[in-house]
Image (cartoon, rainbow, N blue to C red; front, side, top):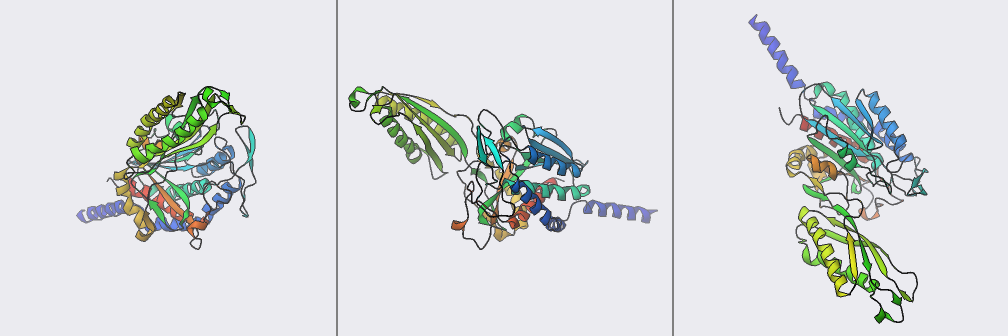
Amino acid sequence: MKKLALVFLTSLCSFGAAAEPDRDELMALSQSIESQVIEWRHHFHEFPELSNREFDTAAYIEKFLRSLDLEVTTGVAKTGVVAVLDTGKPGPVVALRADMDGLPVLEQNDLPYKSVQRGEFNGNDVPVMHACGHDTHMAMLMGAAKILVDVKDQLRGQIKFIFQPAEEGAPAGEVGGAEVMVKEGVLNNPDVDVIFGLHISADTDVGKVRYKAGGVMAAVDPFKVVITGKQAHGAYPWLSVDPVTTAAQVIMGLQTIVSREIKLLDDAAVVTIGSIHGGNRSNIIPNEVELIGTIRTLNPEAREHMYEAIPRKVKGIADSMRATAEVTLPLDYNYPITFNDPDLMAQMLPTIQRTAGEENALLSKAVTGAEDFSFFQEKVPGVYLWVGGKPIDVAPEDAPAHHTPEFVVDDAGMKLGVDLLTQMTVDYLFSEK
């Protein structure tokens, strides 16, 4: 009887040890479905859809997720798709996110799966292209979902797969994206503990991954300045209060906030005026000039300082020119800083280095682009990575930029993305035993 009990206990111990998936076997599963991931990516690339219009894309994803027998919710933030893998065993809840929307860009690449799709953007008929790699993001997350479902019996906790619309921004007069998903409760039921996301990078070699703790992508805060003066004939400027020269001084003065008020040793900051409108004739000084710009910051202190400094600087310059000025900040939308939780980043770094190879995991600098993944990170700890999509034989300076008609990434870059999503998920699920 004692011998039988010992055998039974040994079997129990063996079963318990085998419950955690073998990481090398996960990599092998990723290899086995790589061609399928590439096929999914080609489909998405050939049939892109604009923000808040990802109806066919969502239907394609939904059909796949239901084929895995997952619990699927559609229509989240208009076109988003969310699925939950419940292992039936207690443990953490990990969320994985991919964005779905394309851009109003005319593709110039000669690819068998080139996009020739059209769409409507702010009332205009426009071409549509996956010019930022969201097609690869969806395909990689689908690959990770397939693998995690295949090893479900060896997992614990729950995994939430989030396919998000409108990362590039909702059309005029609409709302969308991660902010709306969060408001609709995507991080609840079950309550998410951590979230992981990644972005394909056209200027990073295939097989490499870039990471950074803290601020990795900037907060974005558009703003508008309306300067009002006094209209006059261009031949008699002394009769005017000139909003054009005032605007010129405002544009230059705003740059001194960055160069003289922000501690750039900590993080970069940017103030850009991208639009200026005023007047309609060469010989009329107008009554009003409108400026539209954007602020980019990488830490909360700099962002708060910008919110205080821009109205102060604009008002001071306008007062000195006898004009008046109204500042609207933020203008319409704004994104928080994409902030990788330092503790979670430190916890996942060994996983990242093991998965990519230590020599291929590159500590990166922050960038002043923005990502609405930041709305998820405001609520739960998150890690956001850049995965290489540039062929090794292409020089970085020759790689087409994101958001351009020539944008292209190598299919071979997606396997590492699938591996990272899968391995980080499994390692976190078993981080607390």
